[in-house]
Image (cartoon, rainbow, N blue to C red; front, top):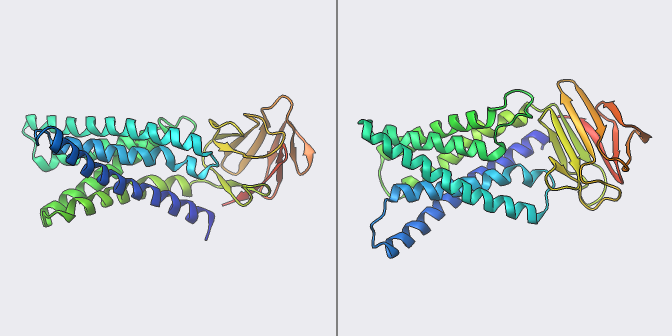
Length: 286
């Protein structure tokens, strides 16, 4: 399986899982509110919170799960996504409910809620991606299109047959629409990647899909090197433009070598071996 196909599949499955988690949270929340409030709650708003929390959870984990981050960082990101996604989903569905006051059709209002939900998912994945090699607003914009597509499919399914299974299928359709709009474009645009050659991460591939990527053992880096000697918190920066890549040493004491020769700033090409502390990586074309 090619690198891009593998990453597309993994990230796509993560987003689809968000739909399942979201719908499970909707059911739990509905049951809880039905008991505690004796049914005096708006199921549509609880749906917004549940779906937002589910998709927010996977949105914050989609990239870190494929960039070497450790479990404590993943847990913190997941909890943040769960909370922020729930709040944003609740706001998205509440705003769409407010549109009913302008005499808009119910279907249009519901589609608008999924559009806003998709935008929220795009923001949670990478925010305003000023480090993007193309468009800073790409994730929010593509998330918006994904939400629109998913919302249209969701409403179409309700029009065809309104039974208990349709919302579940519709939620999965929303997850699939977000996957189609968010994942392939960002994965396929990348021209270079780093393959780890040694250590516990041997074989892992870091996709260079941004203009700049920082590597080290710190959890806030784009890529995290685990269990290697002489690797600093922020050790190396990779500057990536079409058909050109350069590595820079960000560490005061930690060595960087290209093809086993010490460097500070050095253009690198496909096949070059980059040593960051005791870690060895190879630049590859994708």
